Length: 242
Ligand SMILES: [Fe+2]
Ligand SMILES: [Fe+2]
Image 1 (cartoon, rainbow, N blue to C red):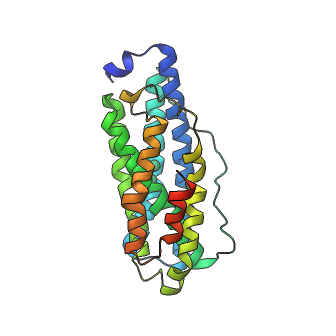
Image 2 (tube, rainbow, N blue to C red; image 1 turned 60 degrees about the vertical axis):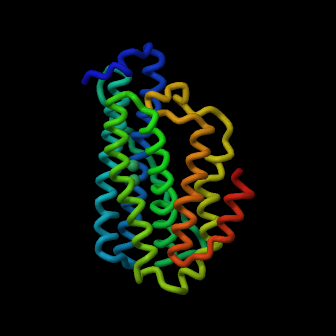
Image 3 (cartoon, helix red, strand yellow; image 1 turned 135 degrees about the horizontal axis):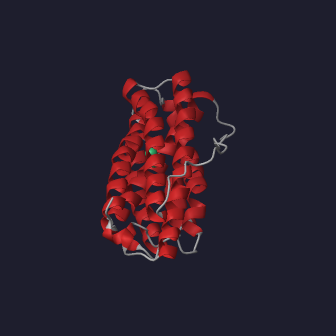
């Protein structure tokens, strides 16, 4: 397919961006694995029907995101699509949580934090991308990630997250946010591809600003609206991650 932005790049520049998208392909499959594990936990411990449907669909969506990513990588390389190699899926143990609490924590980490922050990152990437193929890819992925984020917030509002679970959540929120974001936010090194904003690649500084804004404007208010005390999480957000 024609894409003047991609075709205007030198070969080594195209290879840099191909590597970013190829890696993303593998990461999307990791997320598919995460959702498969969460689907199984929700089947065992309970979720309302719309949440169950969204999480089941998410497994398929993430495989589709991997397809989009490796197709973009192939377009940048100018050769065939390479499907990511199989890789172990890491599901956080989150000891000492068990059962329904652990399922809820996985939903919070994956949907309320990862997917909600991912939506903000994708919106920022889309806003600066000029390559039509990248824009189409990001738009398609973003429309799914919005649903994946929504699944987490819907689960928190459902009867399957009871008052006792909610009382246990404030300290867990801090641990989950730190576990997900400390490394991302404290890393100072340039992001791969950040010299190419028109290809949807964010600079480290923009990335950090977008993540902080998503936490302050969406994620923490979302937890508060769900009736969870966010003080420990806010303390982390202002002290530990700036
Ligand atoms: Fe995805
Ligand atoms: Fe997703």
